[in-house]
Length: 187
Image (tube, rainbow, N blue to C red):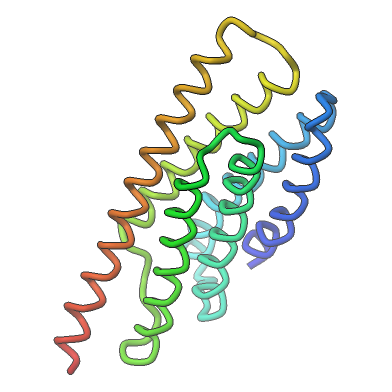
């Protein structure tokens, strides 16, 4: 539970560090990388520790996806707000998370809490890799380092963002189909 709550707290911290790092200050930029790393590592460890130590709870099953959405959407908002990621990709990512949250609420009315799907877990990994790409592009932009390769890094980042959007659409579809199949079974 502490790791989940940590991601909720780290989301606005990441945003504050991002905004401060726009001036090109290395300490703030290091803070961005550290906050991002803590968000992603805590997500990786959170479920593992909960299962390993039998600490899974109903509250944790609700807060964990919330913490994931809040923290990851925060960094994608930063990318879009800084012009690193197109806004249309951000909208797809937001629609996916809102859609899955709604499906989970609907599922809880008829079936209880809906477990994470493989598509959701894969989405988390893809988002993390895209996050690294976005922060690399941002880092080069604000520091002015590696000017010759900056365009290439931004191109790779854009490709990762497009892949994230595609995985988000697939994941939302997967959750919706799973919910509909189980709704028919339980009706």
